Image (cartoon, rainbow, N blue to C red; front, side, top):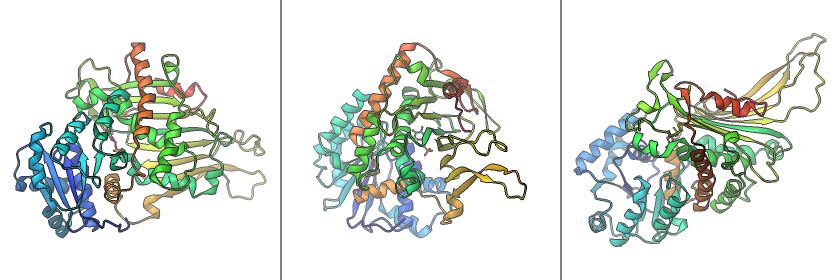
Length: 489
Ligand code: BG6
């Protein structure tokens, strides 16, 4: 990562500092920025949570977490510098009066404050009220909001309105951590730095696109959250629609937040509606039952902790999405995501159109179309599948499908894969919003998703069961097979 211009010291205030996300990701990411010397010498990190802990206890928890979650040995000097920045503030976040204690903890200088909301979104408004009550908001401050913002368009508007009373849109950083992933960012480079793909990226050259985000994990102890939300609102509304919009957007004039976000928004708004009339043809929802993942027996969703035994929440979704615009008319984008699938595997497969005429028929009756495979994670890389002559003197021309494979780990041997949160936190400190989601995008995504969720409710059908450790319900294969295509697995 390049050294960046963090001229100003910051106070990074994490609400929900003892929560899962903060312990696993945020504090670890900040520590990694410390190791890379990317935090200003005078910046401080203020952990805010409900629990009564001394500073010493808080530091011990953070240290233990860092050692658990980073995969290499800790850097002792950086760890010492990092823990010296830590401050802990116990706070009842719904109690506006209590924010005076936070005010006395924060410095009164002109440091930029970054308020990171890593709490349930329902209390974002309370936090803003508290900060305002204690006069802790200035025009220079920034606020970072975790997804999902709301559970539908209406509740998301309420939360966005509550925050907008105190912060302007250019102070608000809505996180979708997929936008900080190396391979997701690389979509911009792949598309707009390579004429090969800039000119062949439309309905004339592309047959269809598959986007798969498969996870082998279940719901990881988040039963009460997940059972309310489900895979559609947890993954499709944010991560998959963001990937789709980066893949399908028009070239932005430059890399500014304004231009990139405007182009992504146009794609989300152009998604063809899925509603009660077509939901059965265009979507599949599933729920995992008992099975084996990588040889280990796992429980079905209904037996997970904090999940209603009669739950109808989906843990798998497949969708045939279509974009109603000039570039993409007639090109389906098949989206698929699920928990407890065969393996953790996220990739985009762009299927180009087949050759209109085959002059190699004698040796190869049906020429396969070229495929561009973008491996998002793990084993990050880009692969182009194409036809090649098998070397040999035989008068018959034998040909074969081969791949040009650009594996990131082989090509760029610079060690550790940077976690998305490291990049995104740095972007917040630098005030760059291009990797964050605008309010308009969030709302357009909710509008599209709400219509599908509403249509599912109207059908009164339960999610289709699938065995944990599989690629989802059989109806997912049927969804794409109806178009004479199949998932790449
Ligand atoms: C989160 C979802 O946003 O992304 C989780 O809430 C999901 O349910 C996670 O497991 C996946 O992220 P990653 O980076 O592991 O692909």
